[in-house]
Length: 95
Image 1 (cartoon, rainbow, N blue to C red):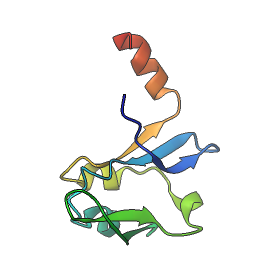
Image 2 (cartoon, rainbow, N blue to C red):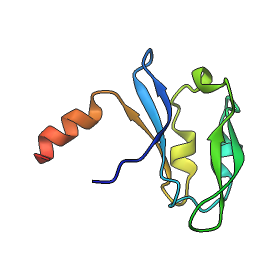
Image 3 (spheres, rainbow, N blue to C red):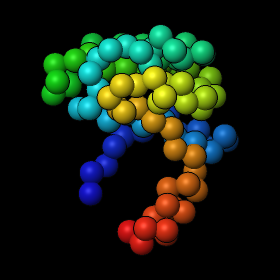
């Protein structure tokens, strides 16, 4: 099982933002479409030799889980999961 690290974990609003770093193509669409402006391109390269996004320091709490980054990503590298949804999905598919 592959573990994808969380960019944001918001316990109050009960969601997490994930980035599959090696899937990211570095297109910067997620940065452009974020209505709160919390994402920026980092200086870290992934295995595709692309600069990946990161959350600006101290801006984690401003994410509203609007999913614009998720819907805009052509590589399906960034996504939001609501707390409880993954457990329900695991029960349905009997993982």
